[in-house]
Structures are given as C-alpha cells and as structure tokens.
Length: 199
Ligand SMILES: Cc1cc2nc3c(=O)[nH]c(=O)nc-3n(C[C@H](O)[C@H](O)[C@H](O)COP(=O)(O)O)c2cc1C
Image (cartoon, rainbow, N blue to C red):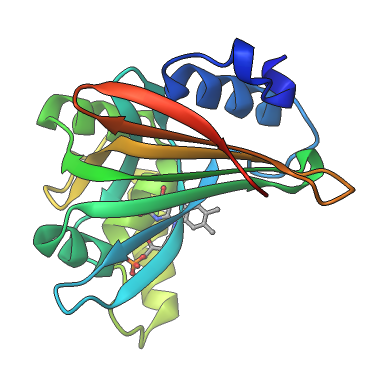
C-alpha cells in the first residue's frame, strides 16, 4: 500500500504520492497540514527557514504565495534553490523536498491574491513585512480601514506566487521500532527514479 511505502506499488512520479499524503493529512487529526518549513540560502550561503502555507500542488510542482521584498525574496533573487519539509506528527510522516523555485505568472499570482482572505490581504497591504515596527496601533488601524472599505485591492507587485519544481522528494514513514521507511525520489535526465534508504 502507498500508506506503507511498499516499493512495488510506488508511483514513478512522487507528486501524486505527495498529493495523496497531503490529502491524508488534511483528513486526519493534523494541525495545519498544508504548512511546511521552507528554506532558502542567501548569496553568502547563509541558510534561513520559515513556515509557508502551500496553496497548490499539481503536475508543475508546489505553489506558494509570498512577499518578494522580505528575506526569502532577496535570497531567491540570488539563489533559486530551496528546500521544503512537511511534518505531520500524528501520522508519523515527513516529506523532504528540494528543488528550484520560480515566480508564478502574473495571472496566477493575481488569482492567488484574490483567493486569500480579506483580512490576510489587508494585513499584507498594511504591513511592510519584516521591517521594524514602531506603531502597532497604526498598523492595526490601517489594516482595519482596508477591511472596512470592503473593496478588492489590486495585488502589490511584490506579492507573487512561487512555483517550486521538485528535484528530490523523500518520504519518511516513522515506525515505533525506529526502523522507519524512507523512499527517496530523484529527478535527473528527464525522469524520476526512486529507491529505499536505510532509516
Ligand atoms: C502557519 C504559517 C503559515 C505561513 N504562511 C505564509 C505564507 O503562505 N506566505 C508567507 O509569505 N509567509 C507565511 N508565513 C510567515 C512566514 O513564516 C514568515 O514569517 C514571513 O514570510 C517572513 O519570512 P522572511 O522574513 O524569512 O522572508 C506563515 C507563517 C506561519 C506560522
């Protein structure tokens, strides 16, 4: 079964398996199943990581929505290589992904912006994310004004969809006896190959 990562039944492409695990997490007792830790590296090789909310996972890869003017955006300018980890504790499941990121099309970014909540959009518009905060009341006031206006504001050009095209995907299935199952997928030469790893 896919749930046990039995080798003979694993798909050639890891994305359908990832989607299957995401779906299981969404329908299980998992808090925030679509959130993963997303790591970038700056041009001096310094890594940083933060949680991002997955917006889509389709044949192209994984799609997020970010503000490009913060640290991760600057990192991605210099180095599009990223790593992403999902951990679904109640399921004892982890997925580690590495790959290349690129900016989504303006049309897709607009759609992602419109699909967000009105409070999320207002917070994005009111806040200069990552800059020092000296007036929280002012920030709250600006956000409330935007929500109260009730109009769909255009997407700021700094806010963009981000497509992660995976190059490696590793599935980890925890077992109580510590003999965990690990399956590593790698994309090279235009095709995916996979093999099991010792735990
Ligand atoms: C559960 C959760 C979901 C988040 N989702 C997003 C997201 O989808 N996009 C985003 O830009 N930041 C998201 N954040 C905030 C980021 O973790 C981070 O604080 C912010 O993007 C600034 O990161 P940076 O300064 O490293 O660029 C989320 C945080 C949490 C805890």
